Amino acid sequence: VCRFRIKGWWVFHHYVSTFLSGVMLTWPDGALYQMFRNQFLSYNLYQSFVQFLQYYYQSGCLYRLRALGERHNMDLTVEGFQSWMWRGLSFLLPVLFFGHFWQLYNSITLFKMFQLPECKEWQVLMCGCSYMVLFMGNLYTTLRVVYQKYMNNQDKSKRL
Image 1 (tube, helix red, strand yellow):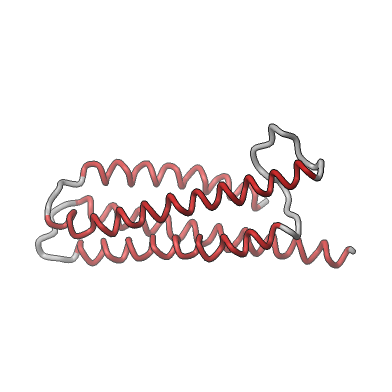
Image 2 (cartoon, rainbow, N blue to C red; image 1 turned 180 degrees about the vertical axis):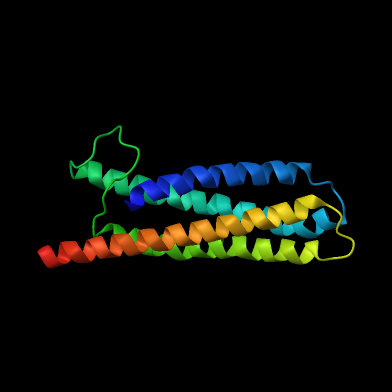
């Protein structure tokens, strides 16, 4: 059940991110944009680092499963969860949560900027709302996945 919700969130996440990118592209290079620019660029660098870590974790899981004969060479994702995957995931989770809360920080920063009297750009509010939606969806989905994997792992332990 949760797997389908993740896919639904993933699709919606892409739409929100695409919308956010378009709004950022149309934001004029003024004083407010310059105020947010360094925070935005730092967040993007961090997000790139997180994507690299996610790739490293996923490819490591697939490599192990291929070595154990449980997956084929052409598999792209991992369905199911093994107990040994917790070690890598426990390293990745704090990095993911930090990124989620950075999205919240971006949203709050933009909402505060929107309240400034010199704020005339609609892009500030739209970016703030987009970051808030991304934060809430990512946090909820991550917590839900971790809980589900933990419960499934507990059920497997009880059966053994």
